[in-house]
Length: 76
Image (cartoon, rainbow, N blue to C red):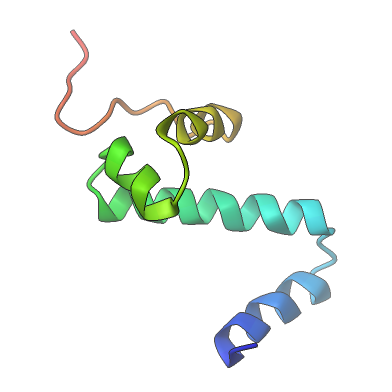
């Protein structure tokens, strides 16, 4: 285990997080970071994450991250 990853694991364990909470927090942050790196392009973010675009859409809704429209699209 790399030292930075061990620090994250130690943080979760010392913070009283249960496994499911830690997984959800990590997943939420990975998704948010992928969207930042791809400037909101959900297709590119799903490729970066190695998941299907529909899975990303479902997870965005699950975590309440789907409020913003995809980059390049405007609400009318």
